[in-house]
Image (cartoon, rainbow, N blue to C red):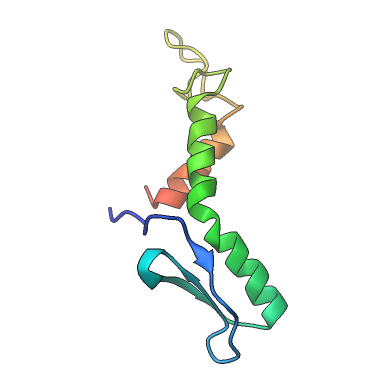
Length: 99
């Protein structure tokens, strides 16, 4: 699996031709968002914070007080998945493109 382009990412200036572009270090284009300026800018801001959001979600899951970061309600019994971190774990899988 290929890793995503490392952050930080930032939105560039809007242009009528290219919309808003999200760039990483050294100007690497991560995304191009077409549409009207207001919507393009809003979407670019959201996309630009994706690496930081993923890192924050991963940190939150690792420090979960319910499952102690392992995703299970019990280390010794099959009590199922931790409800406090299940949605966050699913987002991590989607963000990493894991099966």
